[in-house]
Image 1 (cartoon, rainbow, N blue to C red):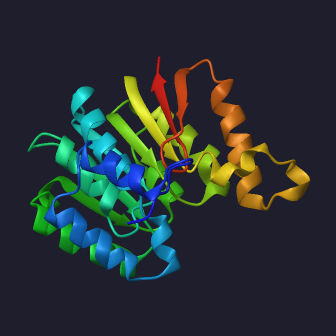
Image 2: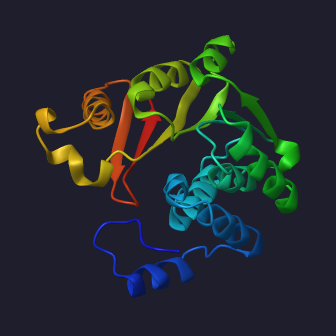
Length: 219
């Protein structure tokens, strides 16, 4: 594992993980298998993010959760572990290949009965759900150009005092650069951050964990 958070040395990162919900055997195996995929493994959330997700899920008493962007399933595993045994997590992704890895590890971790995987464009999946305040927790880590659209669909389906977590909101520090120097994904992240910061429907905080996590609480 290598550091993803800003300003962390390898030694400090190792200390942080060891003292804050270190991955167990199943999680480490998933980290290792994902790392073996090469550069694309950077899509996996950091272990400290996963520990945070589990704790936050428990703290808010979440029973119904939804995730947009699953990859090899680390974040879903962590959220599912925070849910009660009869809780549910809907995972939205477009890849049968990567989520096949996820399915194996969810089963190994004993959380597969809590998870429903929906393969297909996430916006279609979200818009097909009843427009009721049914979810306690949502996590977004998918194509950046659609972040604002995912946010709107999820917020409409989130209960008051529920939370939306959004990954990669610092985008490697590129949010500080002028739009003219940025690609489409980076510009979308900047616009999304401005949207949430000005949104009176939520209370939000942007945390410098890994590549940045926004936590938005629905009022």
